[in-house]
Image (cartoon, rainbow, N blue to C red; front, top):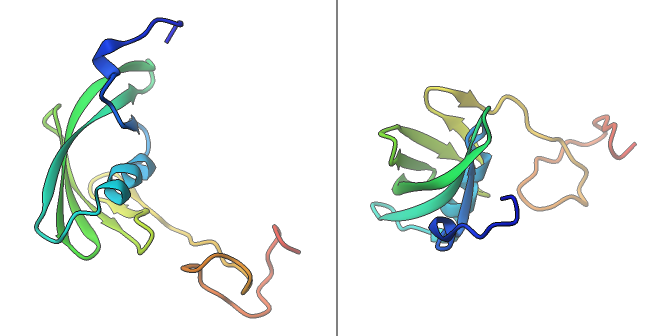
Length: 123
């Protein structure tokens, strides 16, 4: 930030935007943990609303096919339920996906196909 290299962030592969569980998808997909496996990572954490940037130790543990335990260096921990693409559908204690995009047959695998459904993006 401000054009100055941050050596404390040099080893951060992932970014964590403190306002959304969407960024948990990055390490969940990258790590490809087996069920019961866990791994520590360090993410570049952007804290809101003050927009501070600092390294944050994190641990991901795969509980079952679609569930992970997330623990951070701040002492915060939660369970994350993901769908088949690794996107969070439930972040215990603070976030839950309420809608799913409906698509046509030509859309990527994993999206629900509903025949003749109105779609303002495609229609």
